[in-house]
Picture 1 (cartoon, helix red, strand yellow):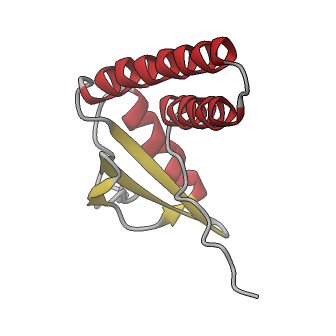
Picture 2 (tube, rainbow, N blue to C red):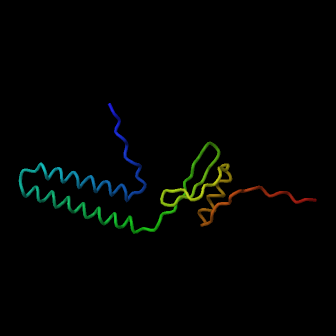
Picture 3 (cartoon, rainbow, N blue to C red):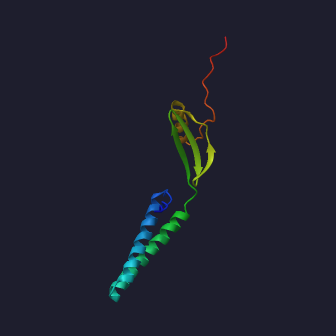
Length: 127
């Protein structure tokens, strides 16, 4: 028995909505093919066309958005690695840091700054 490949992971609610609209349209078109009466067939096709129009509008809205910036947070035991992403592609990869330092990095991101590349403790003053 061969395995059916799983569909790619959907990355946004709009993409999920788009898949749902496509599935509804396809289902209605299949039902229209099996319908016996012409009025039922016409109604099912009209509803399928409506879902097709909704898909078109949603695709247009998705494509008109500006590029999406996001941060990927990867946890490995007590260490956290941050990666700045643009449209799902890595732009900046920061070295793994301890959890306590990751809090400082995340606070910088929330405030609109890039995290520091290296966070080192303050050296005591020389006497």
